Image 1 (spheres, one colour):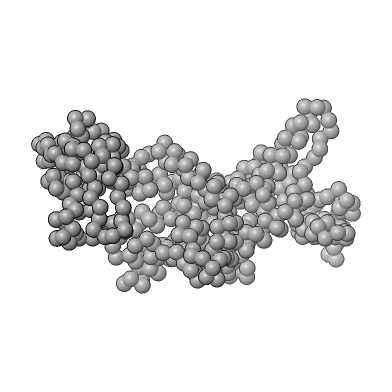
Image 2: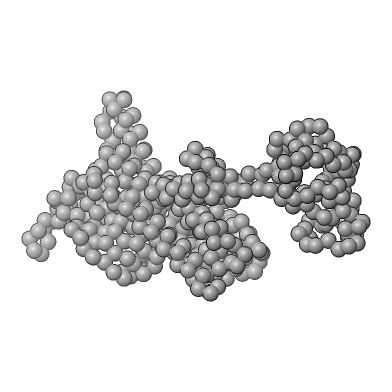
Length: 451
């Protein structure tokens, strides 16, 4: 049963990510077609084609490597100034087709020329009004921003649904009601185990010694009314080793206890406890914080800051994964994972015996939401070949043309993103290498659920 649940978790996660990829590409394709663009391909995956079907002018299909997807929008790259000459030629069937010169000098110049030639191979004269590079800048922004926006919308809907019903496990609401009373003072790494009779006799916690029980709700501490758990913590710490009067509510009645908030050192030699800081020995009751749309937006705002920080340190963290693969260091449990690692975590969550079914479903939904959020944010990075690179080019085109109109200068024309293809190749290679390292890391030194 455990193996089947593990497999189910992996399959559900993989299906959710593939669906997210498909929706991402629809976010590009639908507005492109609405604006009159020509979309010739819509594929999920890369590599050899597993299945495809031609519907109108668009070929829809699935490829063998399910690590992404793409749509082919005709005319992404404009012809360069040099290549404009002799574009229209006649093929062997007597049809006129658009060609771009392929002969150039210099490695980068040749790369750009080859890319233009490949882009214009299938373009015919009747496609002239449907080429993507001729779109107004705002249409380009909508088309290229549509994909990652879909991922952010998916993340928002999943987060909002979980936060509004189950609550946010990462943002617990801590009550003033006691969930657990520690019987004796133990080293931090041994917390949770049963106290021995000797430990219970020599170092009971102040709360246990006073008779405070789980389920009691704090009313006041030394005469100060208690309204939240943070206040309880501050009052106890500030009390040091002095006597304290604790008033709690138990089954509708208020009870008063007197104790000394002192910590006696644990029995094990070498352990140190700051006796100047008060200690009571209780664990508060907590539950995931629930909230609606505004709460979700606020949480995603916080996540945005964290994702931006993580993207800035991503190369260094991937390098850490590479060192962990060869055994040079331990893998960071808070570091990045690939889709393979996400699948493993989903499988472990689904097959974990001690996690309730509802918590398993919530964990899987949050895992899918987190991947979508990161994918959406990452694609907005203003570098080719990411969607953000094309958005940046369209915005620069708007600024440049607007500035020219303001100064009554000639229209500078379209922004030629082809000139940034060398950057795109470098960035694309870096993304590919990091992806491979993370996948290998998730197979060789995988991260696991915290026990």
